[in-house]
Length: 396
Image (tube, rainbow, N blue to C red; front, side, top):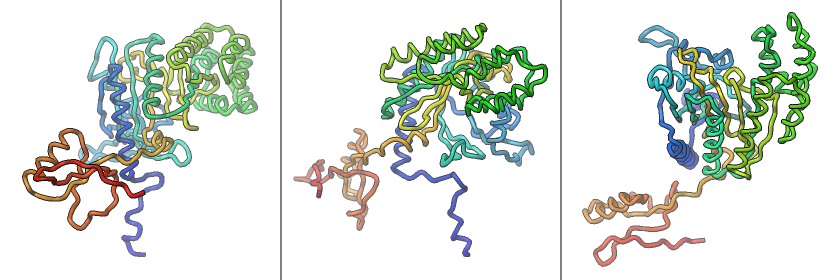
């Protein structure tokens, strides 16, 4: 087989983005950055690769397995290609900005995954995120959710639903119990998959045992998912521990204010869903629309601790490529067709139109009938010695 026959093929779940989709993604990137700026968020641009020990500090095994690794030929040290931008932004807040008050930061750039996080997903997401540092109150959690909802609304997503949970419920039920890290990960997985038999087996394996009240509470979580009635049921069926009570009150507070801000948003709860528990220290949320999970976020107060500055933090992230895949394609952009030519009046007319924000496509000789990514609904034509824009008749 000739070498050229496969040289153009890309790795699995890595793909080129073609013009129409690329334009849509770029429009969404600008939309989300502008929306974040309207809330007071400042743009940061962390590097795509860092020394591995810095990139993975405090992030846990899951992110380590997702990270591509390579050797720096200049220093001989191992580098990593970021699989998530949140730790980098925490480093920027802790070491470069070092502000004493609130810092609102946003970012948008590619991340790379050794394995896609779900079937048919890309291994090169374009991650947008917004994070607020320095405020421990629920106002920061609420702002993160409202910013995500507003961005998705502006992007054209129809019906939205927000699903909430709080990792402190499980941590309170396991407080005082020594649980190995691997077992804890399996417990969270069993809770997320609603696997009662696996959960019972794991709880039985814990040295020193676990109280009957905590065991009953963990098993009750498997059934605690649905609408606002879930919180009422949780207050009855879960042990009355301070961490549990506070978490339930926080969820109630957030849900009421999200719906007050946007009454069309459906709010649900799944108190056993702790995806990303290694990050989160409090409330977590996922936003769904168009039949897919579109954004994920919550509170992660410990994310900056490994950088020597343990600041309160809340935020969210989403993949713009995933978002584009569930939205209707954009119509072609309206444009003006112009003849190719070097005359000063023609070039002046073209320059003036472009300065006004118009797209002007100069037709090269011999290519007058080619179709491209623009809808040329007008043309620049010479009339009585002047260059004027006139409508083009469409053939239907």
